[in-house]
Image (cartoon, rainbow, N blue to C red; front, side, top):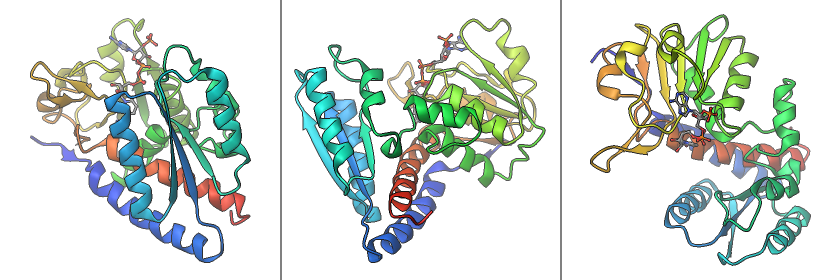
Length: 285
Ligand code: NDP
């Protein structure tokens, strides 16, 4: 193996420590940062994600408020809850855990969140602000990837960056952030012809597809920085990314592992966004 490991778990730990300092400063000045997490239904996976978020808040000195609603909740009931949280001055960030039950339209709920509290950065106003280069909240996963690139000392300006995946929560905002950092960005998706021809040109390759080990070593430019956002199960039920770590790590210069790469960074950036929201609300940024 030649690639250096981009240790997201260690980087996230240092970001959380910085968040704890910012939270303490803000609290001492009279504003304890607050995050409300809304969990609808009883999906075990969502419950685990939410528990992590609540624990991260406790560790960092951010006040958290967990709103659990039954799987039978109507869209109107959830919208009422969102409006209540919008009006609560002690809540600086609101996160509605996705996916939602089928009777609730996700985008309708996202659009109901006060954009100044939209710490996921999914509201169309925040997506638009990012698009025009004036982001208010950067979606947590791509924001975390940018921190990982910084940490690896990546020269983003002028680099060929290839993002595989074009979802609204990862691929598209990732492309925007890389563009803003002056990379030359290519976005690939399921209709891309000859994916490998694009990935082989990439100095920076971000895989956000959701297909186990689909990016193999022969698709990677020697020395490239490879960031694996994917979270999949392999044939043995083991957690793995979109990148075939064994072959890719023989070729890449840097590579992020799964688990222990982007996942912990996504969690850490939620804390950062909550602090940014609280600091703005307190007139401190
Ligand atoms: P989506 O399913 O919303 O998007 C997947 C994207 O991959 C789509 O744009 C799709 O193209 C593209 N795609 C699918 N098949 C191919 C293919 N064969 N070749 C090229 N592109 C393809 O997923 P998300 O963006 O929400 O998530 C992507 C992955 O990242 C998942 O594994 C998810 O679990 C993980 N994830 C991890 C996070 C973390 O914190 N580590 C956070 C969020 C997500 P098209 O648009 O044409 O359909």
